[in-house]
Length: 433
Ligand SMILES: NC(=O)c1ccc[n+]([C@@H]2O[C@H](COP(=O)([O-])OP(=O)(O)OC[C@H]3O[C@@H](n4cnc5c(N)ncnc54)[C@H](O)[C@@H]3O)[C@@H](O)[C@H]2O)c1
Ligand SMILES: N[C@H](CO)Cc1c[nH]c[nH+]1
Ligand SMILES: [Zn+2]
Image (cartoon, rainbow, N blue to C red):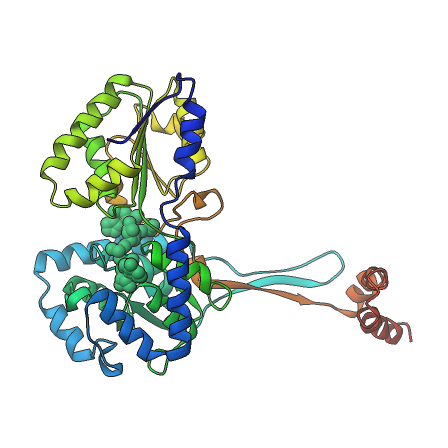
């Protein structure tokens, strides 16, 4: 049974605050385990990665088998049925077209002093793309990681993807091939993140690590940040649906379950202005859960982290949703465009009854690697910009230096940084003869 809340109840604020504070992924246990794993990989390199893969993924590897060979890649790709290949290519095309529009522009201009200023964008040299593989396999996450990296111009792209018990989804391998990935390592979890960040004898370190993953992956990314760049914390999936009583309860129930089935610690929330809709959706969730293949995972997620909130107005629903800052937000209302302006914090917004979140997971075009755990308050979904950095440019002429140099000298003196001031003064003296 999910939590059921009503904004009219006296205890609502306390219950909603409790819902917001639920710790689904950054528990001290997970972080302590991850700290140990990272230390082990830093100390023992390949040996630690191999031992941890055996322990967590039940897969015995050697340094030579950490990565798929070109022959293995070809063999897996050949197994992909035609229908899946066509669907993957459609997804890749749509994701590429969307991300091409994100390419940033360089800028250069001359200001009133005569100084030439600007910035220039360039890609990181090497990126490590995490593709989850524990409870499900994610060819779509290969595309969502690799395509923006390619559009950005990253030179070396490697994937880390666990293959528990050695089971490989050939579509993951094909997705990597069609999106131009150089190497696929069959490793996952915190050990993969540590290897990508610090390197081992076999695995060259990267500059940036992106991609979603479970609580262990999310905690490891937090910990290696600084040694490498990371995109965001894209942890266990979340969906929040805002309803106004005009939606089909079955559709809403399936949308909630679509994210619950990712992980026992995924979170699905319905906020609706209609008591009848709340009841109908809960009944529909139970009906679907009875027959869903992943009912154990989805059922645990719905029971432990699911919530249904009945409120009075759509404005109130939007305010509550902003406090959650969900990864995915569906506006299952009669006039989603009218509600859109009230939404401030969400990783991705899906407008109207005809836009199931699952379309965004695969073929919509926007990226499905999205901030979770309320981090949509300050971060955004994966984009081309995550694989690029911006370098500023400045060029003074003698006239420009004469115009703005004295102010720099004054500020340097006020900071007691004498060499700073002198480096400007030396040039000004030269100009003044
Ligand atoms: N936010 C997003 O953009 C987004 C996108 C896709 C998927 N996801 C989420 O990614 C996650 C995928 O999780 P998954 O488990 O399927 O795959 P995963 O690859 O993230 O995790 C599997 C790895 O976790 C490690 N692990 C598991 N149990 C462990 C333990 N007890 N101690 C140490 N390490 C352990 C193992 O190394 C294993 O290889 C889900 O939570 C899903 O909701 C999020
Ligand atoms: N919903 C996930 C992001 O939270 C992405 C995904 C991939 N495949 C299916 N779903
Ligand atoms: Zn999904």
